[in-house]
Image (cartoon, rainbow, N blue to C red; front, side, top):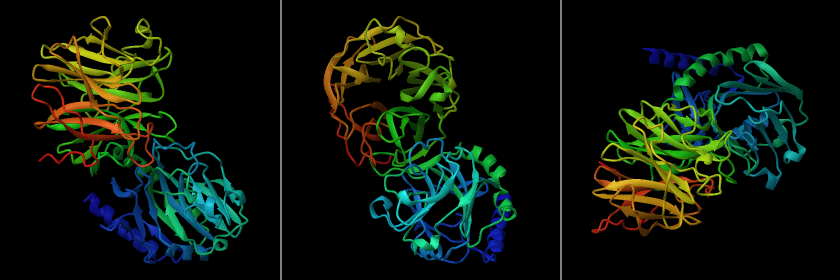
Length: 551
C-alpha cells in the first residue's frame, strides 16, 4: 500500500507541475525503458539517455539516477540546446548526493553542463555549467579564461542529499543550497549568447580532462523563470526523508552481470582475495581511486555470487578509517576467513604512530559486514620484523590458513615472506615470527591446499609474475615449482587468490585492463586453474572471456 500511495503522489506531482507553464523540463527518473531513455515528464520531449553504466535505481520511495563509477552521465540531447538558447530568466534545480569515493580535489564534478563541444579547451566555443566541487556556476562564450560566474569556492558535502538551485534574472544570479542563498552576483553572459548548445549533460563536464560527477541525482528541473525563495522552498521538502532513505540505500546490494574480464567495470578493484562460504563465492578487494599517479585506496569492497556471472556488490564493509591506529588511503591487500561463525578480515595498511606498514584484523558476524576492528591495535607492526629487512613495508599482504588440526597460520611479507601461528581467538599471534625461504619473493603470499599438498603462491620480481612452491607440511620445506602467471596486462603488480568452487578451481587476480587503467587503477579478473597429474599446477591462461556461469 505504501508503494501505491507513493506512486500516486508522484503521478499527482507530475500532473501538477506539468501545468506550470514555467517548468519546461523535468526528469523524475521514474520512467526508463530498455533503450535507457529518461523521460521528460513535462511532455515537452526533452528526453535524455543513460550513458556509461549510469542507471535508474530505487531509494525507498524515491526513484534516483545513479551515475555509478565508470564515468556515467545523462545525455540530454541536442533538442535541449534549443531550450537553452531561448532562456533569459531561468532556474535549474535538482537533488544531489556525492559519493564518498569522489575526489573533489580534481577539476570537474559538474552536476550539469550545456556546451558546444565535447572539449571546450580544444574548440573554445562556449559552455555553461554548475560544479559540485566549487558550488559554483560559470558561463563562457569561449573557455575558462573568459568565464563569468559565481561560487563559494568550496565543495558540496559528501554522503548527504543536498538540494541545489541556480537562478538567473537578466544578469543577476543566485545559488541556493537547501533553500538558503549561498552565493549571488552579476553574470555578464546570458545562455542566449551560446546559441543552440549541442552537448547537454547531467554529470559530465565539457572540459575533456575533467572528472565526471560521482554520485546520485533526483528530480532534475529547468524553469524558464528565476524562482523566488518561496517558490524554491517546496522543491526541497523531501530532503529529510531522502536522507533517512539514503542510510538504508547504502546497505542495499547492487547487482552486476559480468561480461568477461575484468569482472567489474564500474570501479577499479585490486588485490583480490577469494572466499567460498555457504555455496557463495566472495571476492574482497581494495578500491583504487584517484588520478592513477599512486596507490589511493580508502576502502575495501566485497562482491558475492552464486554462479560467477551475476554478482552483488555489498555496502562498503570496511575502510582504513575504521582502524583508529591507521592512517591514509592505504587499504592494501587483505583476506577474509571464517572460524566458529565469525568472519575475520586480515588487512594491511599504514600505521599512524609506528613507522611503516602494519597488519590488523577486523571481525563480523557476516561475510559482508559490517566489520569492526577486533583488537583496537595492529596485530603485526614493522618494528616486529626489523631483524629481517631494512624496509618499512615488509609487513603487508596477509593470508590466513586454518589447518586440518584446527591450528591457524598467518603468512605475509614483502621481499621477505614470514609466517606465524595464530591463537584460537584469531586475533593474537601464538608463536614467534618465522621466515620462509622462497626464490625471488616479492609479496602477495597465498596459501591453499589440495589433497595432501599445500601450495604457497606469491608475486615475484618486478614487474611481478606469480610463482609458486609446494610442500606436504604447512611448515615446509617448500619446493619451488616456477612461474604460475605471467605479467598482468598494463600493471606492475600481480596479486592472486586460489580457491575451489563447485568442483572447479579458480585463479583470481588483477590487471590494468579497464578504462584508463594501470598500475594504480587496477581491475579484478578470474580464470580457471588446472592441475597436472603430478599435482603441480598448469600455467594460468589469462583470458578476456573469463569463466563460464556455474549452473
